[in-house]
Amino acid sequence: MKVFAGNSNRQLAEAICNYLNVPLGKASVRRFADQEIFVEIQENVRGEDVFLVQPTSYPANDHLMELLIMIDAMRRSSARRITAVLPYFGYARQDRRASGRTPISAKLVSNLITEAGADRVMTLDLHAGQIQGFFDIPTDNLYALPVLTRDIKSHYDLSNVMVVSPDVGGVVRARALAKRLDCLLSIVDKRRDRPGESEVMNIIGDVTGKDCLLIDDIVDSGGTLCNAADALLAQGASSVTAYITHGVLSGGAVTRVTSSKLRELVITDSIQPTTAVQSAHNIRVVTTAPLIGEAISRTSQEESVSSLFD
Image (tube, rainbow, N blue to C red; front, side):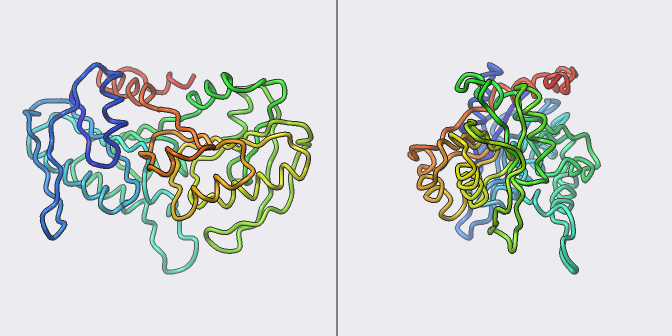
C-alpha cells in the first residue's frame, strides 16, 4: 500500500500517513509556465495498492485536473489498484437538473475519474448519497458523524442539547446525530429565493433554553447558518453552534461567521483550512485523518469499511 497526494490538502494526507505509519509517497505535481499541470511519480508503484488523497476543493478545476493526471500517471506506471480518495467531492451540488438546459456536473466528474483509470473511489459525506451511483466503480462514502459525535460529547452537556437541521433536506443527517446523542431534534424551515441567499421562515420544535447544534454537510457563504442562528436565538435558544463537515467558506464567509451570533463553527479538515479560517476566533477544525486512515487500511486489507459506522 502506498499513499500519494496532490497539492489540494497535503496536511491531511500527511496526517493520514502518520495514522497508517507509512511515508507519504514521493511525487512532483507542478505547473509549466502556461499553467499546464505536470505530474511525475518519483518512486516505483508497479503492482502496488495506491491511494491518491486529493479533495477537489478551491480551485476545484485545478485540483480535479491534478487528480485525473495523477491517476493516469499511476495507471501508466502499472499500479495494481488505484483508489481516488476525495475527502471533499467538488461539483457534488450539481447532482440533478434543477432547470432546463443545465448539466449534471457531478455525473460528468464521476465519469472523468472513472475513465482516467481509477479502480475505486473513497469520499466523505457526499452532498447527495445517490452520487455513489454515478460511478461505475466501487465507491465508499464515509461519514464524519462519529468524529463530530465524539467532539460534541467532549464539549457539551447532552441533557441540554438539541440537534437542529438548517433545512428540511438535511433532516436525515440531523436525525442520525440526534439518535447517536439521544437528544431532541428541531428543523429550520427556510425558503431560498436565489443561490447563496436564504430566508428563515419558521422553527419547528421548542428550542427555549437549549444549546442548539446545527448540523450540515457544507458551509459555503455562511448565510444559511448565520440566519438560522439568529432565528434560533430569537426563539429562546441559549446558544447556537454549527457542526459542518466541509468548510468551503468562499468569499466573505469567514468574516460573516466571525461577526455572527454563532458560538462556534466546527468544521473538519476535509478541505485544507485557509489562514483566515485558522485565525478566526469562533471557527475550530477537527481532523478526519484517523477515520480516513482506518478506511484506507481496511480497504487495502479487504476488510469491512461499513462496520466503522455500526
